[in-house]
Length: 246
Image (cartoon, rainbow, N blue to C red; front, side, top):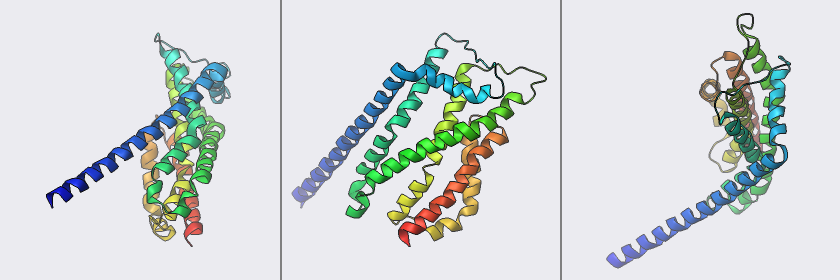
């Protein structure tokens, strides 16, 4: 009995070791594609991308030019922008490897969804960033840059500005993946559309709470602009959950 127990223990340890090796391999793939995307931004269009991120502020203050007051602030900010570009570039690979890692827990028919969901999640992420750039950031920056301008001039640090912009872009990129996430949970029978619909009040409160935690400012305008799409996309996810499990 003791020998059998030891053998079972060895098999379980080997299985656990195999999972860790697989996890390491998939993290390596994801990190490699992020680095490739960062390198592309660094060599091709990093400075153009930084200038592109300044456009929403210059719509309201044409001569807006952030400053940097630390020796490495400009360099760190540049790499932060390249990291966002690398994440956007690597998003299909990231989602695909996450799904493949959990695929042993899925059925054969559910595994076929890996590639379509990977591309769908990537398009949703890019769509969320576009929504943030063209709608949320102009409204939020209009409020932040013009509030009290008769008393003080907006003279932001480049690090603070890029941190604000990239965080909003990244958060809304992830938020726009909410419907696919909910649909996936419904497909795996973890949740149902009916159960999710019953929690809509709690979801509204949770959306504003998450927005307050994640957004870099305390103003209600920015938080509402982030929480609003989160609530709408939650109901879109309920609709997708009903479609895949009706």
